[in-house]
Length: 318
Image (cartoon, rainbow, N blue to C red):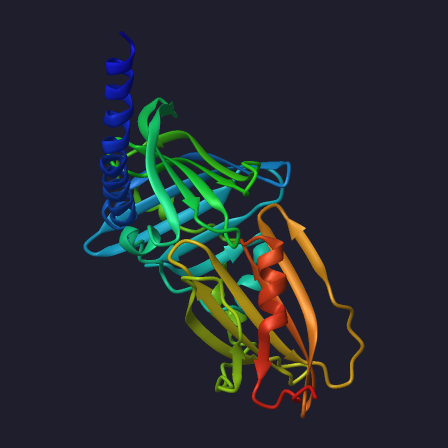
């Protein structure tokens, strides 16, 4: 007597899977538009490598411009102000490094592209920061990238909660709002404090130079493409450091290339939460170069990428 109901349940579940996938794509499409269309302000908690921090955020979309201010509420003072994705000023320990790096290109979230490398599904519902949300899972189809669990606001599709997970389901990083309002922030809330240092002051220390075109990667994880390349000359050492950035539409990593000029440098392999850094020396006809891969990817992926970096002047092994 149970055969027919059980078969019906199995078939209904089977045919429901594409609908769930389509629904997940729709939610991710809304998520991709949300930050460009929706003003909001709130407080969120960020967890990484066992440490927690609390932040206020003000995000205003007005007359085609997106202005955002982020302020850390505990620990050392940290502040960032961005306009249309470009950093205007920073404070605290961020000043030391942020200004010397070009702004990352904005990500265009493309669910159609993502589904080739991730399984997308709506897996439930939840309530975060007093708001109802839909849970979307983004599970990688291979071992070369991490997965996500996204709790998206039913009203706006803004991410109320985001979990970054490894292939064993272990939590690597958590972002979660404790309070969110969809009202438009005031001008006063978006104004930087006096301690916020303009990025233009620090970026002038590292003038851009032409990026060498003779570097390549013999292996890339499927779906990753180069989205940016740059080179900067250190004003003190006069050494040019090149960087190549790769993206699969969700995950991202960078490859840094620095001539050693005879210096003795130890190869490294470190991980802090989801972020890894792997470096190795590469021999070229011009001398040794230190290759460093940094990104939120599994350490095995970073190691394989680092081992695949080649130069047009790399000596050919017999």
